[in-house]
Length: 426
Image 1 (spheres, helix red, strand yellow):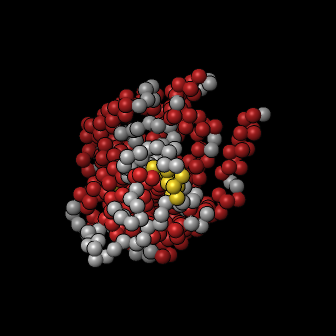
Image 2 (cartoon, rainbow, N blue to C red; image 1 turned 120 degrees about the vertical axis):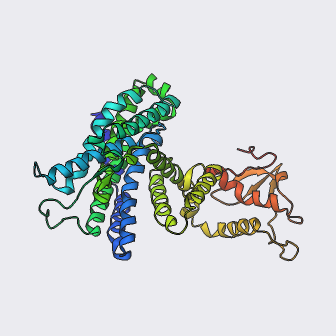
Image 3 (cartoon, helix red, strand yellow; image 1 turned 180 degrees about the horizontal axis):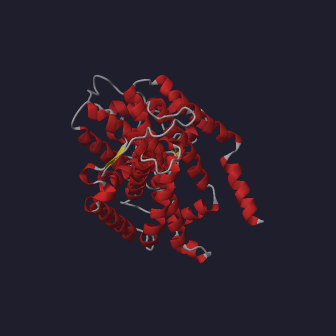
């Protein structure tokens, strides 16, 4: 009886009216994108973004939901891609035939099998041991790619052809537009499935294991078993992404199972924000755009990409999603326009200027209650020590910047430090 109620509650949480509108808007957005960006380069980049979204969301099932930092998640992506490449070549030889549209299921099952085999070893420990074991597994598979050329194809990899057999309902997947819609369809299905998983009892217990494994064990759940199940499911979705990558690129190399690919998906999830479901989606889109677009303008794009990652780690460790969600209360209360002058002032203060020639705006006198000043940026109102800030008659550049940024930084987790007494008044 309780299980039925929990399942019904999870289904209602995923498919209520508001979320149905959101998912409908996402589906409409995916359908309309090729109608807006018709260039072949844009279609290719959109296809890569769809693959990266599935891959990043599958990784976030480990890092964001279960608290497992993995340096070898590309193993499941790459091995499933190799399985799908051999499947396509076998289909081309006429030994058996399945629709290319359903090939991502082959990749998902392959990733699940490897997750069952390797996850039993890696999930025995959590934290740093899990990260080191996953790194060792990744290095082991990457070294095997050159030792077993019959399966991995050596340095040249395995080439294949997605246009095999008869067209299935008129889809030969020769034109890139057909490949894009195939990737978009599977991306939409996987996004719904992974979001629905977060609303299930397994997803909730995975959050509990992430936050406090000892308490989860105390109430009767085995943290090792929960980690194992989540890794297997994450490997399944990573395998789907690997199969779509095989269809899109028509070649699979040893780089697909290397540490570089694992680090790439880690950066996607971290930049987007592992604390929110849509965070890895933002990171996947942004990183793919930088890799595809920025690399065509300069050869030093990795330098700029590295600087951007360092800035995100230092000043917004919660990712881009945290910067978006900190403004949600202001959007709901229709107070976003009140923050625009403050952000404009921050931009002005970071630029070198002659303050004598361009005096700053008049500052409102804070309302003092005892020794604290209430900064009225409702609903982001926070009490802060009044002595930290300058008086209206003598504004100071450094303190004035704190007056604007500190209330938002406390909500978003950004690295803006306050002065004396910055941690008081909570």
